[in-house]
Amino acid sequence: MTQTFFPIPAAALAAALALLGAAPAPAQEPPAPAVVVAPAEMQARAGEASFTGRLVAAQVVDIRARATGFLESVDFTEGQRVAKGDPLFHIEDDSYQAALNQIDGQIQSARAERDLARIERDRQAELVRRGAVPQSNLDQAEASLGNTEGALTTLQAQRQDAELTLSYTVVAAPFDGIAGLAQYDTGALVGPDAGTMVTLTGSDPIHAEFPVPLRVLQEYDAAVERGEAPTEAVVSLTLANGTQAPQQGRIDYLDSRVSEGTDTVLARAAFDNPDHKLRDGEFVTVTLMATTAQEILTVPAQAVSRNLAGSFVMVVGPDGTAEQRQIQTGSTRQGVTEVTGGLEAGEMVVTEGLNKVRPGIKVDAAPAAADPQEG
Image 1 (cartoon, helix red, strand yellow):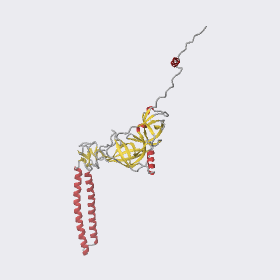
Image 2 (cartoon, rainbow, N blue to C red):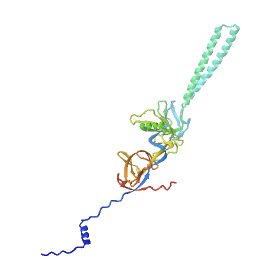
Image 3 (spheres, helix red, strand yellow):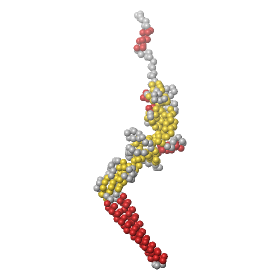
Image 4 (cartoon, rainbow, N blue to C red):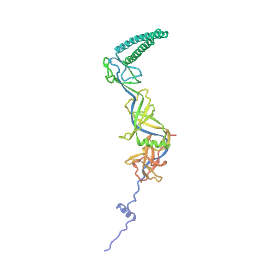
């Protein structure tokens, strides 16, 4: 049987094969992710380190009575400032004043006896000179004068003691400070065994004590020996609410011992506190900043990420390939992080679009826009 063939147009055949998947179109690669990069650059920055510390008053004293008696008055307002020498309490002083008056009377009598003994001594000396009486009479007169002078000296010492005891009936502030709560009211019997009457806190100046890791201190000492770090620093305080205290401090003590439990060294800074707004026991952040600036490699803070190995940045090479780079960092201030290792000046790091980047891929990198506040 004869078969009849019908010619099929070439265009129709190509279309049919395309519909059947016989000739798929070649796949296109996705576009490179767009990111923003900035260079690692050298900046003149003063070295800085921060530590957690606590404020400690320069003087804290429990005031006690040194004289026994009933309390006549409480002469201060609790929680207010008092000056050195201001009276805090008055203890009844009648018996102490009477004892002092009695000794004064005894001193007057002793002086009269001394004057009489002196006259007798002079009279006996004249008689001995004339040969009217023996030398023994003069010796006895000299001894009598010595006894009266000794008695007078003893009474004068007793008077000093009585006068001192009388002064103890006024309990005064030993230094400028803030008076705490009075532990006794008027009419109470107080004395040396009565315990604390009030606690006086002197907080101008006030100290900030903070532990410094031994490793940090050793690295700093080594940097000073190499001439890479200054020997002086400006000390500032950041309070618990995030505000910075207006006054600057000075390091005035560094312990010679290392704490075995924390491997730290106790340091202390002193701050003027004329308005007493810095309070004893307050937690603070102590920041030490070098007085001279140094050239330090920096990157924008948003370029730095962290993983289990530490800090890292995504570096974009000249061919647009992204690389994850572990770096060592210093402090971060004003949106800039100091880099102490792992990066070179001029290398480009990703600052925006980090969530799009994987190590080894190509990226479409654009430089960060200039800060409109600059220049």
